[in-house]
Image (cartoon, rainbow, N blue to C red; front, top):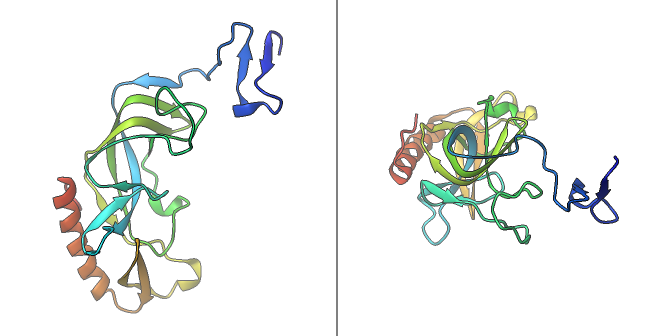
Length: 197
């Protein structure tokens, strides 16, 4: 490409620098305002001595202790603003609400899908939106776990609490799992002040 040079010997960040010394970001990358998007969380027990109150956690493990969240960068990069287009930081959501069980999600763990309002600095690319601020706007939907392919003849039987996670035990009856799901839906609705269906 005439008039540009790669940044660093290995093309660091895959960005190109023009002779005017600015990074050329892809078009329509930045925006400000609010976008309501779909999101999927894991359900995890609260850290500490009492593991009885469930929390939502991002698939990467970030705990959503409150309804509102503000993004920060854990990659150790020095950004002026989060999210940065050349980093993976930010709070994520999807423009479409694809079936969560078709996404590459962890199996044998209870999941929740729902809607968040992403705001502040917003970056959208290929249907994925990242933002600096988020608020759960609901409704949330407690999902049964994705069953591993080799357990086709079983159902989610009960939930086992292990440090930092809930694991689903597979069996023939859903009675214990259904009881856990009812209790968890009520607790999540109380914690985040949103409807859980």
